[in-house]
Image 1: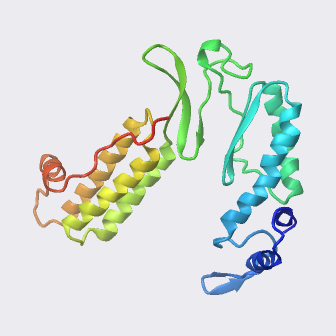
Image 2 (image 1 turned 60 degrees about the horizontal axis):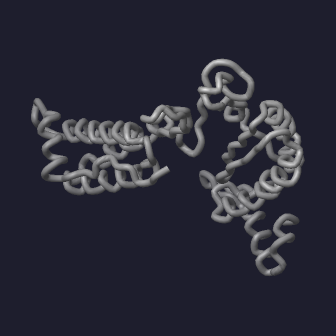
Length: 262
């Protein structure tokens, strides 16, 4: 509330937010009241969390970290996920040590399994990034794996592809949806599967990620065929050639495509 009062002077809004923070949470028929933080699943929680982290992390990084760096540095944050980049390894190590203390002052802590130092220098510099040796590492951020690759002209650039965990999770979701809806008419299933494919392309369809999009397309259509065969009374079921003809001519599904140029 103290952070909100720096920007918001309207007492009505502040009072409403205070009520939200004290609102109970209903889980499995039991009502509980959080002692700290924002209510889990509350509609206001993402907004308040973002405001809170802006004070805890964003402003601190600009005001206290950047002026003390030996080299260049930057930070990208989306909700509670963030990546910090440093030109010098020493800067990265010092900030890594300072982060737990900074977060602890505000009742927060880092996710130990997701917080690590990554060597990400350009491969041709021979250092592997940050003064280390060997190939540069990779890291996942917002559903994409970031890694170095060479262009057709032989230049190094940062490439992004769908993270393996995200791809497996997306295909698992398709599998469960097919199982739960296999009783519906084929036309409805294909129409809704097309929407799911379009939604996947709309987020993951970035430059150089076509191969991952194709893997999702192939995996989703294979699962649809498998469940359609499960409900079929024919012994042999629908062959792969017949199914490909079905999704190409009768119920055309959107093919993988790049939506965003990065």
